[in-house]
Amino acid sequence: MDLIENQLLAWVRAGLSAAVYTQTADVETEVNGFLTYDRKVAKMDLDAIRKIHKKIFEAAKNTSR
Image (cartoon, rainbow, N blue to C red):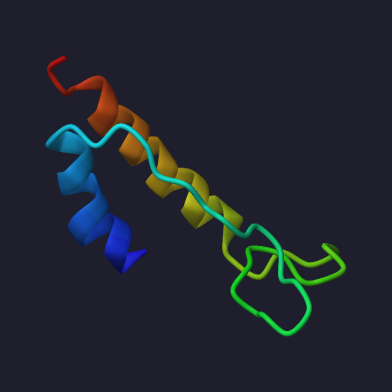
């Protein structure tokens, strides 16, 4: 969340138009997904993610085009 709060929001305000999560669930030996390998357990606080995404969308709405 720190990366989003301290860097991504500034990039969005500066005109960043896209960001991509490349891995939503763990695969094989990797462990950096939002969900476990079997996709049965959310490993992150989904409410916190929802709140930060709302901030990102609001920042994007307020940029000049």
